[in-house]
Image 1 (spheres, helix red, strand yellow):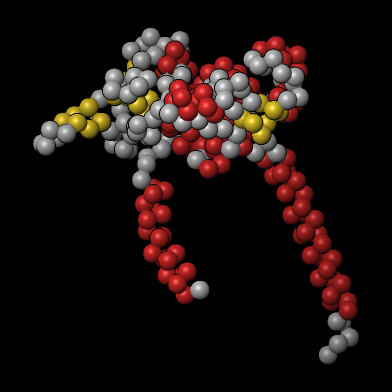
Image 2: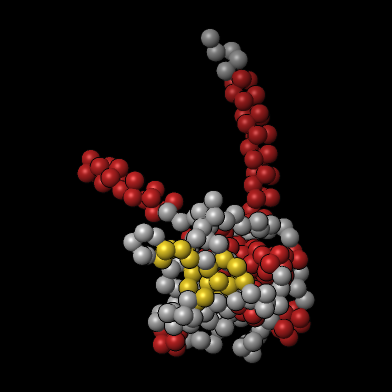
Length: 247
């Protein structure tokens, strides 16, 4: 037991450094915004689901939770020909993914649970042109990324600003908050503000996918806490009644 405690104390600084090493933006998501969630589902299915599954979700559950008519879901958001009650799995196999990208694209159902919404939001906004990479882009939050910038048609071509230090090493220029300065060429379908909204909506949808019952759970929690308060009052009064004659 003593050795375990010493090991944990030794690892704490390393864990703290690992968790705080990367700067992330605050994701302005709202789990109650159905319009945002609907748009996030549409964008995810059109731009992300070709490679990434959300295999712990079902199409009909998403449709029900986000107020999307089943016929609209089947017609516009299911691209594999499966039934609306099936799990949200694409047609790309792990073997194909490994061949194309060097590794199977991960399932994203729980990505906001283990990465966090801020990380996902920042990651989607951190791509920049890098001719040395296989798909011509890199990512400031996840250097050496092996996926293409699937939202480039929406954002436009993103370019990072570099500077060279006294040793001749190039570094990406960052602002006063530690975030990389990335500009676009204006060729995207969306303006900067609209693209930011699109990334927010995708992140919002992935946060919902990670915990579909979150709002219901929170609502139920208030009722449980109220019950416990009332139960405590009656239990306290009952205790006083039982012990009233005990001296």
